[in-house]
Amino acid sequence: MPGGIDVDQEPVPGSAAPPPVIVDAAPHPSLADDFAAEPIDPSFASSHKREVDQRLAQITVEGVTLDGVECRAHQCRISISGADESVIGKYIARLEDDGGLYGYAQMIVLEGITENATGKHMHIYARFE
Image 1 (cartoon, helix red, strand yellow):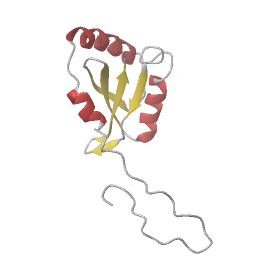
Image 2 (cartoon, one colour):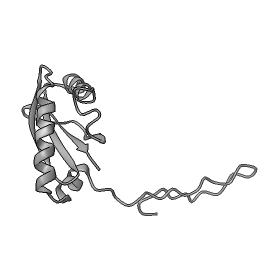
Image 3 (cartoon, helix red, strand yellow):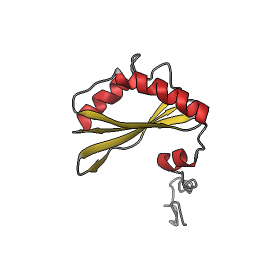
């Protein structure tokens, strides 16, 4: 069965019926695809970028660099780089505190950490839906 688990085994006599067939859901767009597809609302983008920039300026974690903030119509993408996962984790913890985006963003969604020639990189999505 394409996209799922195909169970074509006969039940063992005296055992329970085979488990139900699990079918995968339709593919989900990636966070980056979802962000790229969102239109830019100039009013939302400028006011939220200004506020996010101010809040992020208060967060400093040695070994983490803020690469940029980009806002659309309902969310902002925060790009950071760090030497390793531990410093990125510390930054995320600070981001989720009162001095960060806690109480301002409705939701914070983390993308997986990737690695390039300069170190670790991550996108964080602050949603305001």
